[in-house]
Length: 172
Image (cartoon, rainbow, N blue to C red; front, top):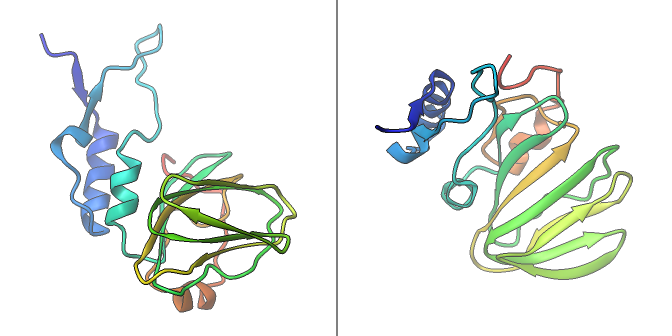
C-alpha cells in the first residue's frame, strides 16, 4: 500500500509555482504521510530548495511565509548586489550557485556555493555577486520581512516597491 498523501495545500502550492514560472516535479507534489496523533496533516513547506533556488531568475521571490519566519529565493546578476541594509530581524543566506562577497559591518568575506551567512539583527550587511555568472541563493528572515508571494523581477523593482510583511502567511 502506498503511504503517500497528495495534499490539497501542496496542489495549491504547485499551481502557484507553475504561475511563478516553476514546474515542480511530480515527486514535489506528494510527500510521505506526516500525521499528528489526532490524524491532522502537518502544515509547512517541503520542496527541493536547492533546485528552486538554482532555477530562479528573479531578484526576489517569496516562496513561503510562516508566522515567525519566511523563505525567499534570490538571483543576483553578475556584479549585482542586494544593497547595504540593516534589519530589525535575523537573516540567514545559503549560496547554492555562483560566488561573491558577504559584507557584514564592513567586513568582506568571499562566499561561494555551499556557504551560509548568518546576519544578526542590527547588522549592516550586503551580498555582492563579484563573478560573471548569476549568484543563486535562498534566505530565511526571522520574523518575515516581505509580503507573502511577492516577486521582484529586478533590484530596481524591489527598490521601487515599498512593500513589507503585512501579517498574512502562506497558509491563511
